[in-house]
Image (cartoon, rainbow, N blue to C red; front, side, top):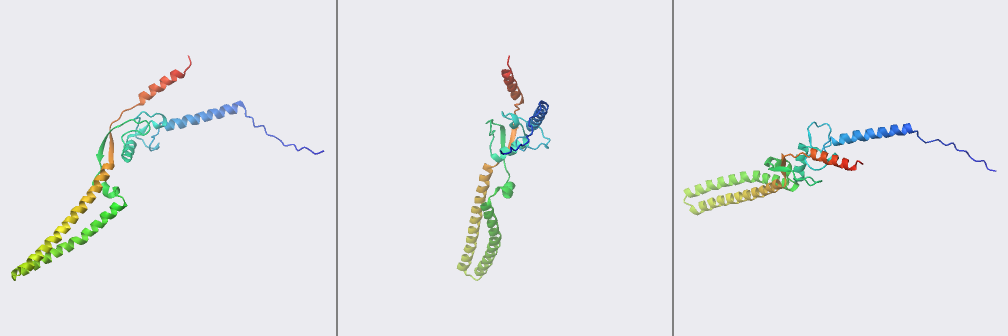
Length: 217
């Protein structure tokens, strides 16, 4: 007859006192965490910022409050004027960004390459055109003195042609970069809140009415 192996078992049942303590501990944690989330900006989630929180839309709970600066920055980057969750339209004004911002951060890789290349060409071509025009003028004056009118006229015409080509290139280049700047400025605005509507009272009233409906008579 085989011997049966007896394995000791541990009683894993918990007492009612331990259950109550763990439940109370979980409730305290959940209440603390919920209060912290309700008093936190839904955009930055930074509890160290001391700016006042507002409720600018119909969102409630952890998504109901945010900082004014955070909301304006998000609206500027998203190029919107309404809440993406509840659809509430904010009272905003759009301000155009400056030319300096486009030069520093607004250009893509190709536009920056074109701008640097055109500027380098301008630095190289400008002395060349100026020196060539000066030499043509001096030569034309010399030939005019020795009564060689046709040669002098040809040199003056060449000088004017160089200036026309150079001026045309400058105009086309400036218009191209101006178009890039205007397109970027139309897509990127600084959004500012003009009128901030607070929906704290509305949310509290709706919550109280829901609680009254759920309370049994």
